[in-house]
Length: 64
Image (cartoon, rainbow, N blue to C red; front, side):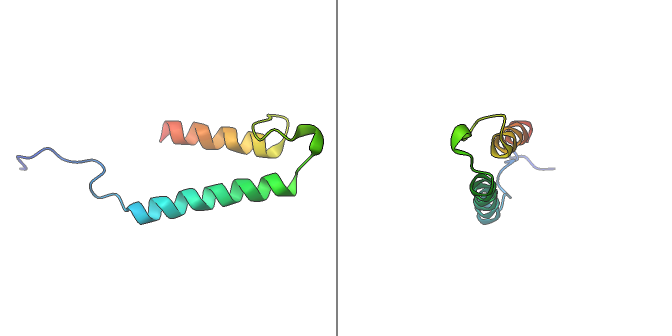
């Protein structure tokens, strides 16, 4: 048995986490640029594909 307190994030590979968030960010930028509409230029607009994608990214980060 371990006497010391276990660190949940001690074994976390920080490089992979950074790479993951960079890929997620690049994916959102790709979706935003592919479906850009001047009438719905807001990044968080729920009518557009990128707005829906950002919503799901936020939900998944919250649940994780």
